[in-house]
Length: 250
Image (cartoon, rainbow, N blue to C red; front, side, top):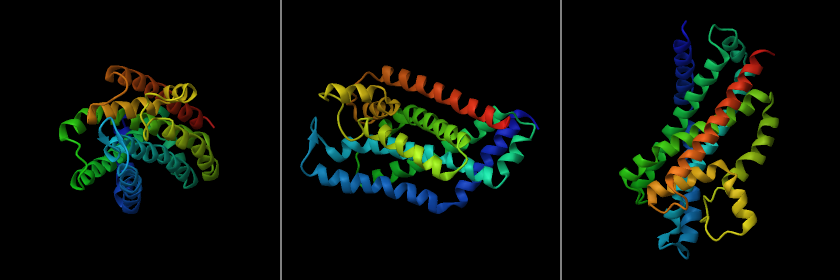
């Protein structure tokens, strides 16, 4: 088996698992819709930001949230694979550990992008005025967010052997990443300490890039968003691949 065939086989397995677990896809769509229409509509009735309805303003942030939660929690399936001994079989196969990581990474990216495509379609049907052109321009940012967050999830999945440990760490990673990203509020005019925190959050640049491409109201240049998010993504890919290398030697 060649390296590419092994990567494809792992990706295909992950994709088929996703297709079988329909409740997983449904639950990942319901939560962002609740945020968008309950939270967004409630505040949107009395709040507008730069002349834009609040519900529309937070829509790129909700897209980023969907990608982030889906991608990071995908790492939990590494723990399942370990407990079912599937991972052991994969690690002793001819494919390299980095190849296993890439196959898993592609599987997680595929799952998350399918779910956000469904969310974009539903939002369009339900009246969120995001143009197809804006959605297409946002694809590079969506992909970078997904790759970055899936790599983080796979890193933790490779490091921890229990669901309890994984979930505990995720609580200290997921919510800070989301709340400090500017997904629910504009970045301008923030207090100094909060502004500093947002700039160290990789999701900030993803949300700002999505908001810039979809709504034309980003706080930073798109080139800067793309560069910083790409840099964070490369670092997380290295972290995830290195964790898989060490896991294979245990």
